[in-house]
Image 1 (cartoon, rainbow, N blue to C red):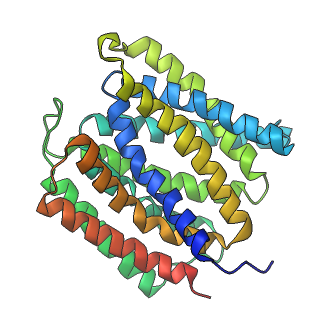
Image 2 (cartoon, helix red, strand yellow):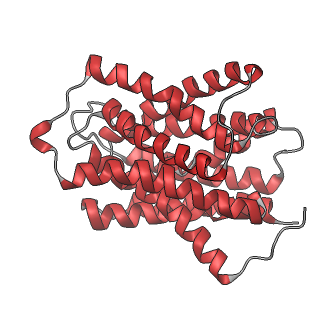
Image 3 (cartoon, rainbow, N blue to C red):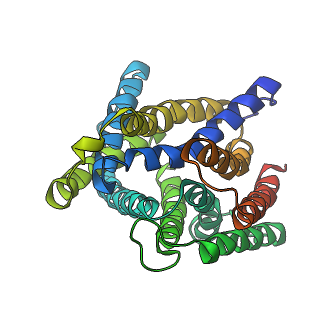
Length: 297
């Protein structure tokens, strides 16, 4: 189908959507002040399920999976649960700025997985260069990050976040294959529906909410993750991808680490160190090189 031409308003909206992803790192750090990792995930996706289900009902999209889809959705839900769990644990032991940079590397892994799993989505010389530059930025951040909140090994939290980004890249590539046979809203909804009881059981069995710390900031962090990122962000991204090329819209992903670092400095008091600046520059440049190739006709 012919794609619409990007207008200034569309560019602004696309930048805003990807800026939301950067703000997610700050929201996670706020929520972790009172809600441990599994509780944060449980509360976030409980809200998100309600939001996406209401959207699906409003649009009249059938949400009941076909019998042939259940196995694939359960597998996706398990993959999703592991990735989010690792991410939240990692964020507990690293800063918001470092976490946002490392999570923004997920398109690197998505490209690598897509090269193996998606027909016609091959790595080119320019994409390989972009991936190498972004990997260098991630390495700078991980090797220069120190222990936070009881993490005894240098970069242990950063390493977990980076692992989560790798898992996210694989999940996106796997999701891309599922979308060839399933409705996109159903895929997104059921991966969250399946994950909610997993997070709930893990939270009840292994974590305690720090009730004395529950306040505006942790609650706002949960609401932002559940409604703004997984709810509003999803709806806006769907709106854009229905009207414009997916590769063009995702080309704005390099905005995410920039917004994440700036918001972490402003709201969390993170320090704008040399290695953080270098990480943002290298990761952003690498993602831009990959995105520019994807968006080219």
